[in-house]
Image (cartoon, rainbow over all chains, first blue to last red; front, side):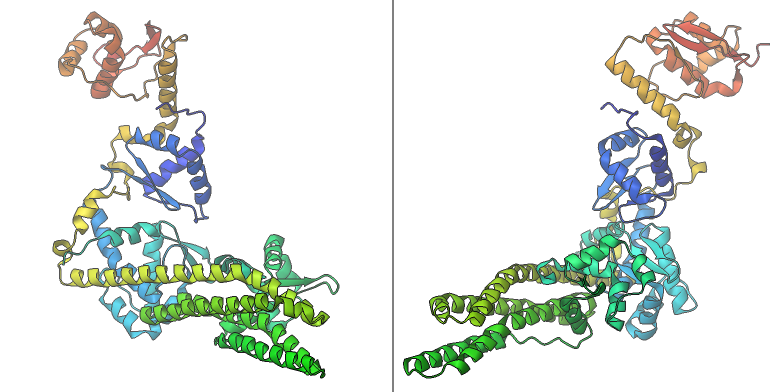
Length: 184
Length: 389
């Protein structure tokens, strides 16, 4: 396939590459760092961007409302598996907080902390969760939020009241865990 | 009427005007100018278009619509009971009043009381239909969004679904009544009754779309809730297996992880071979792709191409013995490209071999000055062995 590179804007190609390096998702519902604009730009030239990055070994994957890059040599399936195993506990905790928790969900840090303070079931889940060591409920919620943020599944929408939104990329976790088959 | 719109759309608009609506609800007055000016007009316009807000041009006041007030009442739990049976009762009563009316007409008695009752009953029906529709809407949203217990949620949503079906039946009953009594109602020649019949028919037609939309919304809520419920159960199951260290043996999670395209994560730049630092060479890659385009579209290269020593291209596999070539190169005084030509390297492979030599043994090569040699319209920079003085 011929790539008309004149049509590809170098500044956004550079930005896409920066995203690849950080292992970021490119979300339609993320409004920080020009993410949604980048999503729109890729949508307009999806096949060109795919072909462009395929030549250097990165495969553009499109999902509902987000893009990400896959690369056989850049990561290994063991670390990807470890990440998914960690997220079983986190996804379960968040679904227990609210069964509607998922893509597009908005919440405040305080509201989850309050629920955790008042629910023995949630406290039990938090207590048994390995890998997140916190001194109190607030720190526990903050650590969960930080992890989701670091992994590109969540974004702060209002810093004054610590309000967050779950990005479209969270679907990556949910659809993966949904696909797991349990042998009876 | 707001209820003829999709519930999600209404919720979104309501959320975007939340502060204005909240302020109006709290004080039932014009919102203060600061709040109003901080909201985009289009959102307020949307809210007015959907009858969430009402703008009174005469008084120049923005206020909550009747629907919104009802919506708030139901959300606050002031209004969560349906009275669908009232519609059937009203229709039944109408039949009785019409019968009495007929008897009085035959006996040439005053029909004033019956006319008044018929008018009142007909006038009440649209409000009862609307009230029930709003309560079911509110209850279904509440069940879907706020009820944390899955079983209670599904029970409540099923109740809402059955109630909407019941309400559709009640609405059809009203339509049937109006159709059956059409001639008779017209013959009454009572302006008030005729206008209320028209109003009823108009409302009935508008409500029909709302019934269907609400029914679809509830169906979606049920499906989504079931999906969420199954996912929660699966997560709990996976958690149990994880605790028992049986996650890998009792599920296909490992296999799935291998099959899925692995997401690029945390690439450490220093781990990458210098040649893979593509972000430093974006412009160069562009040039390469550009030149490939030229090559594919026009095989004859008109202008000479200057080879850039930093350029990276894919090198075709060949059978040349590079270490030996390097040894021979270091042992003589010619520049690299002249040496390669003298060593009978194929013309079409010249560029590739030149790059490979440079790439593999560059630490022992040097460029004395930027002199070029032209071969086949391509310019090669003069590279010498480090030993050469």
